[in-house]
Amino acid sequence: MDYGICSLSLVPVRAEPSDKSEIVTQLLYGECYQIQGSQGNWHQIQIAADDYQGWIDFKQHCPVTPDYFIEWKANPHPRAVDLVQTVSSAVTRIPIMIGSVLPFFDGINIRINDQKYVYSGRATNSALPFKINFFTKIANSYLKTPYLWGGKSIFGIDCSGFVQQVFGICGFAFPRDAWQQVSLGTEVHFANLTQPGDLAFFDNAEGRIIHVGIMLENQQIIHAHGEVRVDMLDHYGIFNHQRKRYTHRLRIIKRILPLAK
Image (cartoon, rainbow, N blue to C red; front, side, top):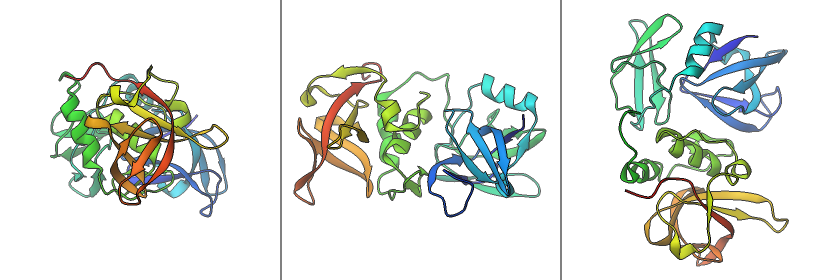
């Protein structure tokens, strides 16, 4: 089996092997994957971090050795915290974004196969204790990011991608889609009992989970709807203060994080 790593700012992962196919998710810099098969100019991949599957253009594939892939999976990796930064070597410079993975970062260099790249921006540190203030700061970093179906980046993100990235940057491995995320945590029975970091999930007329957002203080919710924005939540759902109407119907609230501190 062949393995790869995203060596570009981001790579679209599509539902089918075609440029016309919808983007179902994205690879951010430093994310590893394994190749499940190939068709024409396309590789079918499974992302190492969340097992999500889709197709990438073979021209955007960067191979890594099996040993590197195994080592990558066995170790936690810092994540980039700056909105936009670069990794560089003597011959190249690659722009990367908040949430990008920094493989084997030692405080100066990251490593892809045997090649080292310098990263001089801010990065997470798994040795530090979890702080809810850092969590909410990361969430607010995405404000005004435009909505993009399948997106995971500061330049385009969907609701569950936003949740996955915020939790991932803060050290919590998270599934990709809202219908998967709703299975985590414990239920919070009333909207007025929420705390920052709780997740609110919303359904459609058929009862299918179609939206998710992160609770802030005072029943505010930050979520990707047109853009990453802050609205109010009550027991009915999300009230959009600009449109003066409810936009999403509340299904359930889940507590994922330890008590805020």
